[in-house]
Amino acid sequence: MLSQKIVEKIRVDGLTISTSLLVHAAKKNRLIVKLLPEKALSISNDSGREFFFKETMFPCNDSVAARLSDNKYFVRQLLQAENVAVPKTKILDNAAAWEKTLKSRHLSFPLVVKPLNAAHGHGITVKIMRKSVLREAVKKAFKLTREVNRKKRILVEEYFEGHDLRFLTVGNKVISVVERKPAYVVGNGEDNIRKLIKNYNQVWRSRISQYDMPLCPILIDSEVTRRLSLQNLKIDSLLKKGQVAHLRFNANVSTGGRTFDVTDEVSPALKKLALKCMDITKLQVAGVDMLCKDIKSSDTTYNNLCILEVNDEPGLDIHYFPFQGKSRDIGTAILKHIFKVNS
Image (cartoon, rainbow, N blue to C red; front, side, top):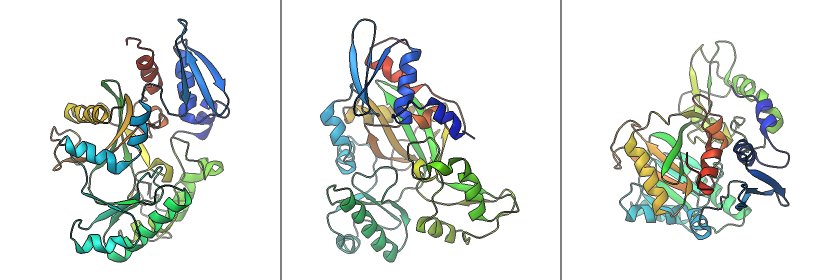
């Protein structure tokens, strides 16, 4: 398993791990890097071409397109107009509107609730089966929107069961695909679930509130309790050796999810669809999030998949450091595209 020491060795002081990886890629490709105020940097070549970077905001992405891509509902409307499969979605602008949505039968259980501009899995509740859980999930999502001063709107969508995939697209190529699996622990026949989580988190103990890592601690909260209860388990249940306890429905790395490289396994049709999504949203570097039942199938209809969102600031670290599988040099691919260097 990836250790924190490896990540800290790569990190450039004051920069995120993704930005640090971009710096390493630039130096490897003999580009000139200058650290600037406000955690920004410039990268230039020996011909004098220079670009500004900040975190994973890339200069090749149109600024308007990048801002619009933050709105999940807007992106889904764009994609749907181009016959791309997306979840059946309703937007709510107040906490009481969920009842009206159910009565109108616009959506059916199971459901997912998330803030309109959610990141890192904040405020999200997945696979809601009952009205009581839906009510609390809506309150939770609106609470987050108030705390971060965003537009007070949230999304309620129908739940889609499938592999959680992130396609990292650059120009007209899919550079990497990872599958994100929700947090889980595997029994050793001796420890209960709480202890197994503690063991997994041990290496990340000093980063318990840090989301900027390719692996993060498993958070113990009400969502873990809900997920365990559906498996007839509790936090203090003892697992048999090899028994798997699934701890969340959402697969965000920030809450303990793990990534597995599947770049060479997904079908060409899925990669082509990811590139279509990037083209529709007018981005040149993007992270396309897809739920898919059969990743080797060429079926791109709602029978097999749906597109959740298209991210203009995709993290790089999960592609460099999958929990299992091949590391992909995303930084080099992005820089070559920006500087128009042939592979």
